[in-house]
Image (cartoon, rainbow, N blue to C red; front, side, top):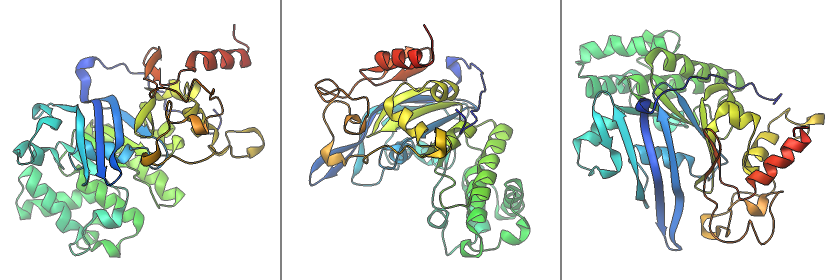
Length: 356
């Protein structure tokens, strides 16, 4: 695909390398219209040192999935089914969904074993505390440092994330920094505890193109240095190609395609994934964008059958709009899709490419 260059790493970690396992996760929001399934049966695994991207349009359940891992789903949402298991080298195996709110391991988890880079840097930082004060607090809470130890360590973190004049910026308030500087400060705070898993929720939102590239390069470089896993939440397949090893495509709260990035980019097997890739700048001859028609439906009006069928150019009446949502099926090694026509569409693509 000419519009993107894929990250073609080909390592094959063993099952013992799985850091986070999410199994049949369901998150409902209780409203006057009833229980709305924002996340509906999501399963995936993240291996140590690798990056898994959750990709899809706004409203598909990506961020709610990230918050569920930290047990921070905002009310009136709640986890109603599934398991989230963290296999930590520091704290052992923890079933996060089984923890009570007063369990000390939740405190150890949030900002400690698992850190999150939020998508809005102005709301993620307290406006009434200095940047250094907030980083120092994380260092004291999660690494047991004294105030005297936390300042040089905090300055060093700001230097590590590429913030110019870190000694001076340490004493600045968030409003005194640019958007890119604030995002670097948030990354520094997220790294303060040496997390085993870093969740990056749209980490380049509202940043200019140059700063976006710098922030993404920084995350990738820091991941290499620290050896942590990354869950990258994004709507941009260009970012996925640049950053991720594995990808799970979400639509209406469900994973509709999952596999290694190289396989999904070269051979997308779900019409929604194909539509997302066609909508990338430069993906089509003549330079015209091929937008997916329509919009993600409201959770109060989820279509029957495949949730994507009202927008799908490949949908068949009486087949794609009947019954329950298609299940995720393995169509190739490490590559699964939830489409009842997957094999037929595969055959059509093969004929178009002149394959037998």
